Every structure is written in structure tokens, then in C-alpha cells.
Image 1 (tube, rainbow, N blue to C red):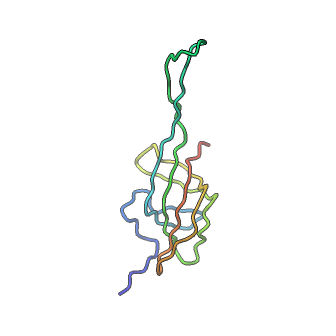
Image 2 (cartoon, helix red, strand yellow):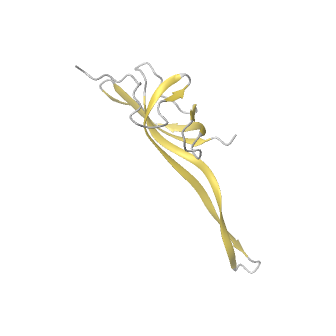
Image 3 (cartoon, rainbow, N blue to C red):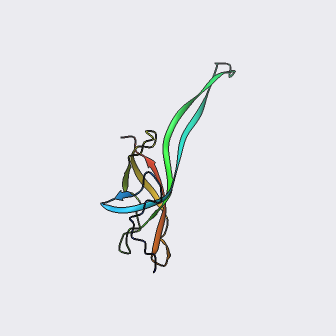
Length: 119
């Protein structure tokens, strides 16, 4: 009996499956980065007085399994929502980059990069 990928298995990932344009994708792996920037505060003489950090965007990289062979693999500029128990990653994401689809038998996947939308 052959195992056929139909896009319904979550693989134990809490935020899987993802829905993009009403098509269901299974996320194989999602990695989140909480970016930030250090800002140094100097006196008028250029002497350091202190520093602080400014939080940046939440960025996401991952791989998604395409639901069917007819699913569009170009997910660039598409949006998806994550509603997980971790409030830091909850929200709407915009996909900025995606790879060419990778196929192995019935299994098709795409890697992507996204960021959490602020508004």
C-alpha cells in the first residue's frame, strides 16, 4: 500500500495546517526570528551614555507541503494567519519570497520567507 500525501496531516506542528487563498497547506517546519536593533546613546562629546534596543519585525521561514498537484506553488505576496498559543507569533503574515517547488513522487513542497504584518 502506497502512502499518498493529501495535505491533511499536521505532523505535530501546532500552527499547521496553513490556509492561503482558501487552499490548505501543511507546514513541515516554521522558524520564527524576533529581530531588534541596538541603539547607542552618546553625549555631545561622543562619549557613550548608554544603549537600548528597539524591537523589530517577527520574521518567519518555513516549508509547506502543497495540498494537491493542482495547487499553485507560487505563494509569494500571499497572506496567512497563525493562531497559536504563543501570542508573540500570533497574527497575519505576508510571504515575501518562495522557492521553486520540489517534488518527490506525489510529495510537493515549497520553502518560503514571510514577516508578521504590523497593521
